[in-house]
Length: 285
Image (tube, rainbow, N blue to C red; front, top):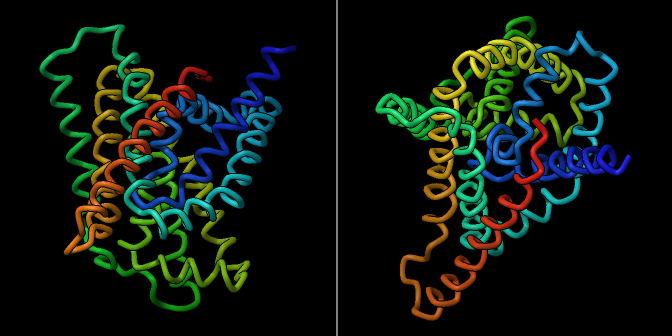
């Protein structure tokens, strides 16, 4: 009974952390799920949904309760803190990413590192870095009306699904690339149920289409896949550094600013490292 309660609380807590962190540019839900040790279980649950409908529904409900609570509560605090203390808060998430690397490396201990391991790692790193440098609005699909508009929304939903499922890819950045970020914010603030509903359905369809191949790859080529995932995760830090930390540094920062910000950033990095390392001990998959 105690183990079951502990497992349930861990699922809700990890959902909470994932939901609250998704508002941070450069931090993807997939990355946080990987770092928290719940990624494989999420993929397996969705991929094999109809094999154990009751058990999978209960798991997803617990996860979604936590994620929903995180989105509705802590994400607002994180946004406020990013505005007031952009450098230390961003460095906190850098520490969280680094803190999760040891848990990912443990996935590779079943087989020795080879030259090909480095190749897969570099491939994952380069993929995420390349996506991060795609200019915002370079692919504008937010146009048209009627059937064409809804077709574009379906495409957007599938792309969102890719960003949600694949670690290291920021959902907010992909929406900016597609030219759909402002439209999504407007739809949410104006409670455009039809617009949000179509994208939501398309996202669900995309998730169910994507998870099966990902599960097969994880089972068939675990070593190569996790080498790439480590590259994905490390590559995801570039957007935080490039878009949040560097722009927040004043052009003529005084020595006092550097000292104060430096101390806070070191403390934030250590806190993020220790927090994610502690949470990643409670593996669910």
